[in-house]
Length: 435
Ligand SMILES: [Zn+2]
Image (tube, helix red, strand yellow):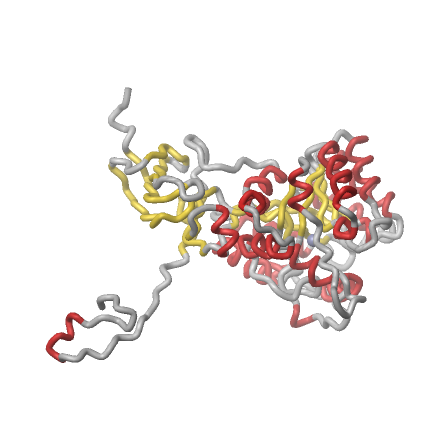
């Protein structure tokens, strides 16, 4: 039985689709939650928003981004374009980072990400003798200041090794006691990768947090720390709480071997993030033609049960001297590089920046009555069209509050000369549209 309050809403987002070419529905919001979903809702409401047949979903989830070292091209030089150079140049630059400097650069990226429909980000923050805790303090402020639009989780990250700089361990420990949400390691920059992995798990277990490793960033399948990570994950019972990023050496393996590894990853509950922009830029630098792509086959891993995501990684620094923090653009880049064409694969790639990425971070995703009204509108017929066309992001709400609107695109078509000056009011454009 309905009451007089059933049709009282704070907001109704009208004329949107929830699936590819689906029927148009209205989404009603009350007290920050989705209160109803139905075609042509009749109701008393404070605000109506015309979605103009756009696709509505919960928003993009960036599982892997480095806000602290974004936008530093002006203070780095890139001569080789290699991973070693990127690590070296960035380590040099970060000694000069100040808290306000990190805040300003991170804010620039977060604001772009919000306008591109990103509602959650996992950012790595380097904590070591060069960065101190300055970047961490800045990103904590960023997390608080932009919580109106996007949820940021902070990964305290040992980019430059652990066993070679033991003081980093205590700094990470301090950060985890002071607001960091999880711990991240990078075995390939440590002279003792297995000891590095053990130390990261020691901190994870002590603080009860998830783990995220940068792993196997080369084209050599024999150079791998993956077995050690799988072993440690199982040993500590950390299944479902471990992510690995890059793993570019999978791109050098035949598909049968990738499928074998996929089964092991799925069994260990380890999620994998592919970072196409960085992987493409840094790999294969010794080749002067037929350059290997160095991008792991996320769609093959996903088809064999691995939770996978595609993410931003770096923006405008020696690891990736491009970027706009747009995940729909990154999904399109991945699909293009992976030579995908089938509809099912394209939809899977959309999930890698949406529902599958959310699953990796352990957060809910989906437009459902009774759940938070976090909604992003994309100018597309659905997920497939959004990836193929890099659908324009229209507007977004977090918990029922509008967090951004990108405005209406307008073509300013030229007027055709009128033959009869008295008929000016019936002028048409050169394309025949009435003025
Ligand atoms: Zn990274």
